[in-house]
Figure 1 (cartoon, rainbow, N blue to C red):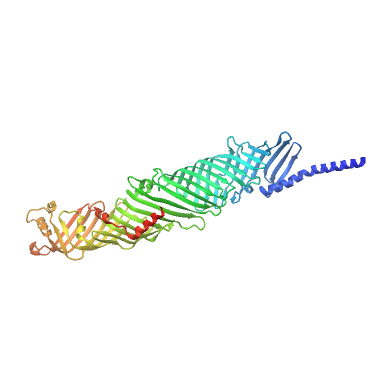
Figure 2 (tube, rainbow, N blue to C red):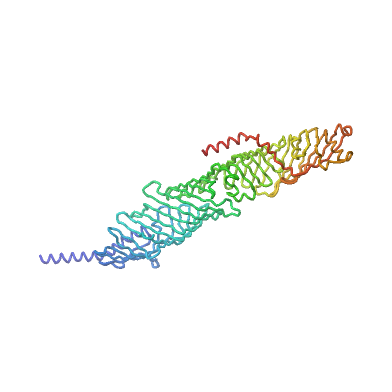
Amino acid sequence: MARRWVWGLLIATGAGLAGIAILPAIIEWQGTRLIRESLSPTAHLDVVHLGLGGSTFSIGEEGPEGRRIGRIDLAYSIGQGVSARLDLDIPVAGLLPDGVDAPDAVLKTAGAVEPLEGWRWRFVPDDCVTLTARRIVLGNATVTRPESLCLKPVPSRDFLVFDLAEGWHTAFQARSVTLAAEMPDLKIVGSLPEATVEATFTIGGDLTALDAGWRKAKVNLPGREIAGDGFSGNLSIDGAVDRPLKADYAIATIASGHDPAFFAPMKLSGTADGSLDREIAFDALLTDRSGKVSMALKGRHDLSTGAGQAGLRLKPTLFGAEAAQFAALFPVTRQWIGEFAGTVGIRARTAWGQGAGPGKAEILLKDLAIDAGAVTAQGINAVVTADRLSPLRLPDGQTISVALMDAGVPLTDGEIRFGVRGDRLSVAKAEWNWAGGKLRAAPFEVGMGDDDRTIVLEAQDVDLRQLLSLAAVDGLSASGTLRGSLPVHLSPDAVSIENGRLETTGPGILRYDPDDPPSFLAGDPGSSTDMLLQALTDFRYEGISLSVDGQAGGEMTLSFAIRGSNPSFYDGHPVALNLNVGGALDTILRRGIATYRIPSAVRQRMMEFQDQDK
């Protein structure tokens, strides 16, 4: 009996000693398997020390030059529980969620693991928890900065807490972060003074909740010359719902970097929702500082493919002296436009990424009045459609109606049909009423950036009486019609008519009988000037040739070559007269505006645009 007991004790003791001997091997085997699944396929765990009061483990890469990944020093007792000291330099590729890739990214930290009540522990870092990565890829977006990020605990919060029942909870902040990201059609750079993140994970590492906030960031789009300052917002993720991501954001100032600026500083506020591994929808409101002009932006972006689209809408907005200032909103237009009044509305849509369309836009112009220096116009009405935004393309057939335009000669009831492809403007029809007749331009094409161009206007059925009324010469009247051509030369500084020529289509009457003759026609009885005045009192012309030269807003000269006779002058003997009338003859025929009617096709397009905004 005693021998059996002794043999039993020896067997039990041997088995116990054998178990203690193989325990490190079991720990190394299981630890290595877990580390390779989560951190690195070539990592392994070594038991440096295993004792009743504490243990030490080392993690490293295999091979003679394998780098050290970390060291864990455990301490445990019945009274104090389990605590540890960590020193880690670990790859994080295996810890990232699906759809996020960060090759060669490393997390480095050192600190203490302290026990809390229940089955809970917290990690207290000595200093920064440093995340280093050359790049982070999210779908088609690549983040290249920050290359190194210093994460510190939020004041009065634990950096990291592990709960055996509930998982992981972290709260940290980052300061003075530089930003840089690239997408196929877009580059973003900037800086982030401060960001705070609080997140919860399951024991297995799946994200269940996140709250992030940032303040006063700066964001620039170098390729677009657009800068944003004061970018603040909050982002949250709730893993329990279908669209877990929610965000609200605001940018205090968005400015154009061009000189002169394409647009005045504006502010933006908006929201977003969706999923980091799928689609994010967003909407925003862009407002000028006066608060009189606002544009709504709404769209979506697929993070998995990098494709998205957005729509922009400016509700019909009144511009003018007592309303929004167009030149103040778009400073770049000051070099072309002096005054701008009327209503403008915009609907545009753009897209990016694979399969993106060319973008499109509709622009409403209602009762516009524009003063562009050498050219002035009133009563401009149209809905202009672009079927491509970059490069710009307006299909042929765009129609603009113009109640009144003065470009050296006063034109009313205009209708222009045109198209734009890139920097080329093609005009299929340009027609106006002028002095009772018509002025038409033959179809032409010009470069949008051409400094100088000449457009030849062909005149038909022009009323000589109405044309002469432009000269505002008291006592001058006439009958008959003219035809001919007026070459209009446009340059950056002026609009002028060069060598314009009109001729009467048949005989008519020319009378000049002023109550108070001008000094150049006042003369003694029998003098040549007195005889000219007598001849013009009832002149029956056979033909009149009229030359027009001069600059809009400046001196304009009408030169008449007249052939005919006056029955009461020298017994109706045929005479030839030459007469020059000069002065500022660019007076606008404003009386034509009162009876002007927008063409039905243009009016219908305007009504459709406005109906969609109701």
